[in-house]
Amino acid sequence: MHVTSEEDVNAFRVHLGLLGIVIDVRLKTIPLVKLTVVNILERDSILFDGRVPDLARKFDVYQLWWFPNSDQVVTASGTFAQPHTPGNASSNFIFSELRFGLAQSRRAFEFLQGTRNTVALDAFGEFAKNSLYTSVVGKPQIYSEDGETLSNPATGFPWRLQSSSCVSSTYDTCSWDNGQDSIYPDEVSLAFDLAKFGRVMTVIKTRLRASPYFSLFGFFIRFMKSSPSLASLSSGRDSFTVGWITPIREDPYNTASDQIGISQALIQELVGFG
Image (cartoon, rainbow, N blue to C red; front, top):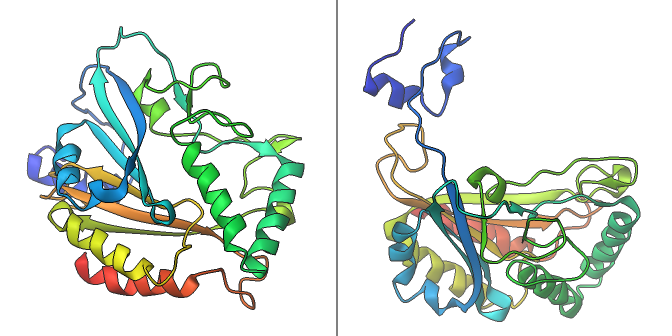
């Protein structure tokens, strides 16, 4: 089977596996580029005043972390640069940690969830927020060239700044690969037409008025420009995804995660906007 027409390529582009075993591929490529990205802290009023859709269209890469507890947003704005631009930074959004430290974090989180200690849980969220735009102690910097020093703005190749790697070893491991002390995430991600951005944000804000504490890591909001791929979430439209993560309890069947009711209510209410 030979796939050559633009229509057929757009139909299979996201799911090449539908073609079976691919033995020969010729792809149109683009010149190598670098990416310069800067993370800054802003008030969450930016989500409701109509600016975000324009910014998402303006920048080559644009994403947000929204922390409703503090009414703040960390924005990440990226612009493509020439390959000779100085900089070789990588992202450390996901990283390896000491096995012992992960075990202690697991027990601490379980205790705080069990006692509904929202003050301490909010402190975890505050640390997570600060780690996204400024230098912190206790974890690798969000962008770095040497693994220790914060680079913000950061310049590097897009695949290094837009993805992270986590490798397990004898002493270090990933949060989800630490045996009985693993921290497994309960992850939700929903996609919407960019034209509905303001309405979706308003629904979330309204729902969270009943709950000052929600997620340790806030809401992760990513933006995608319109794609000709028929199976893409952005097929024929500019779109965005809203995601949130909550660590699963040690006994998820008998001890529910804090604010699971709010999470389920949000899912049910937002599905209708898809």
